[in-house]
Image 1 (cartoon, rainbow, N blue to C red):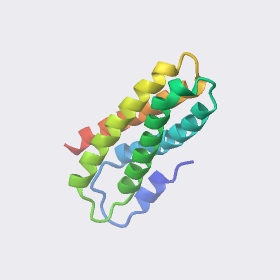
Image 2: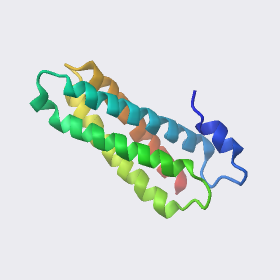
Image 3: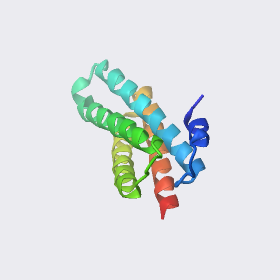
Length: 134
């Protein structure tokens, strides 16, 4: 169960971002951060480790960017769209790069396929939230 929606609903002031888009993005980014952390660890167990270095790096970067973005998105007090927009754009770019790299390995590594799906979902959620901000 995600706590994003109940916490957003419990916020005592008016939300400045559409709650459905915000909830979907927080949930997708949380899932993506977890998937990327797990995938990086799984990649380290592969026998062809040299071929997985880029995937590991992108997964670690993506996990960190997603987790940071979730933290910023979860704080609604004195919300600043000038901070949120570039952070979402960076998250979108990182998820896109990681998703593409994971898809490159998906044919031989199930963990990369799953991570790629999580990255693409997070990428779409970031784009949807960015679109709703305009």
